[in-house]
Amino acid sequence: MNERAKVDRKRLAVLMKERIAVVPYDPEWPRRYDELEVRLKKLLPKNLVQRIAHIGSTAVPGLSAKPIIDVQVEVNDMDEVCERVVSMMEEAGYEFLWRPSIGEAAPYYAWFIKRDAVGVRTEHIHILSPDHTSAERIIFRDLLRRHPEEAAAYERLKTDLAKRHARDRTAYSTGKTEFIQATLRKGREGALR
Image (tube, rainbow, N blue to C red; front, side, top):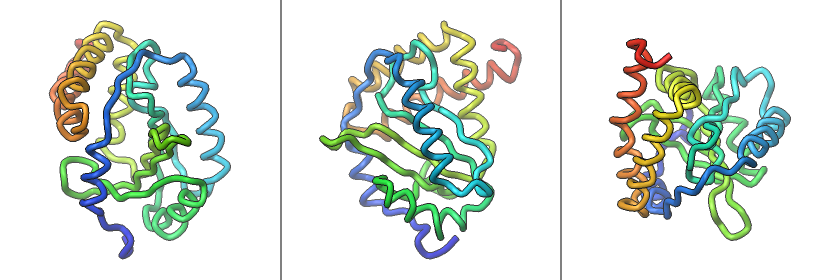
């Protein structure tokens, strides 16, 4: 990727200290996602996009979540994202940052944040090349959709983590990792279908 594809660690650190709030499920989240998907399909080059998917807890009916619509956009050319899409998204009002997919190392993906009039995050657009991690995000979402008991346990964990780590998104995310991996393992082993 080009020179622009560098992680701004200082800015990322500031973003990771923004307040976390887990709120009760809002039945408007699916509608907001649908509207956002339509906007993204109009904005992004058609030949670039392979799949657009609603991910994260707002994609699971009934699940409490941070009230941010997370969208995963899988693309076939990250160089084109660097060269064309970043400026298009910034013109549409999104903040842009390269972000590591896992931990602190490559691969990186293009992360776009949209905020409301008072600066609260409302959307996260994750633009990336499809890989094992992006596939697992969708598998995890689908497992939670099909297994309300897993979704309820995840909700309890997230609520607790948000209280303990209200301004530490890294600790909040890290605290979810074991649960997510265990759920995916149960899915692979057939304990959850």
